[in-house]
Image (cartoon, rainbow, N blue to C red; front, side, top):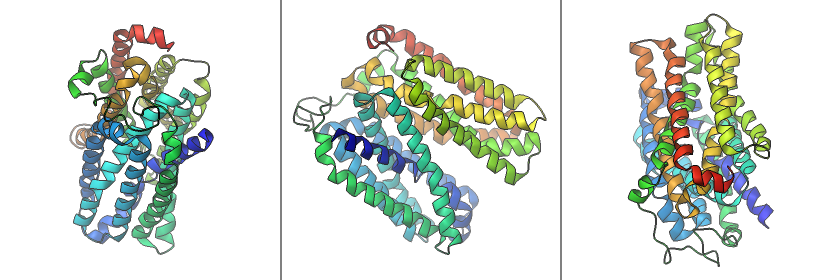
Length: 398
């Protein structure tokens, strides 16, 4: 039965990725029909980001009160409902309103599932599950493209993904007995929530934990680097290497493929190497990729550089999450991962627009130097975490 639960978790991670790239792939069509400026996509993204931050910070309380299975099922249902609302939206304010449950649901399921996997499954599953997120994020643009070319419109694309999410939510609700059969620090011996036995971990206790703040900054820096690269790779190649817009869009997608392929391979590497070692290796590979994209006027090296950066990014996110219970304690892991997710969403939300301001007003080709800043910040914060949690590293054999 546990194998069936693992299958449900893998499907849940695919569902996490499905909505993530819908807005970007459909917005050129959506903004014309809605009659709003192109920049209004940022408003929708900010609302979604705010919702994910709030639900991530509340994840410890919610999981202790209701259990991981219930939080996951309800969160996916909220996301499905929001996507369904998107599919009927014909005014911008309707999309902005639907973005609220969209963000709340996404943050809730992300934090709850990541903690569950960190507590129960081996490191290889964490990497492979985040690879499945990439599968979902890669598939949804094709779903939207199908809807647009088949005459269903962008509303139809959202409706298709909403139906997939509804089916998945139903599967998770039906699987609740499987979730309850596992004993975690947020479940008692009968699989029920610990709401009456343990109090949620307060923010003062979280931020007072040795190495916690450095860990959060590390997460912020990683997602800042990843999302900035994902958003601005095409523009950089057009400006720096004179690549056509069509080819740049195609080549930029290789960064994302690098992340997915890297996480698939990283799952096997976790059998031989520790999380700490894989994170350091990933940071070194990112640095090599940045060097490649700095070399002027060599298109092949720039393209290879973005692929290498993607490969380097692959182990960092899942490995940090996986070692969280060992470093900070299983009793604090849900709260810690909730703040980690919030830090990640803040980085994802603010770093790409900040680079946009730099590109517009200072220098578009500053991308590699912008990435170097976040890479250095990430590397320093990771080493601080290692130093401040040294004894925990030794005990957990990380």
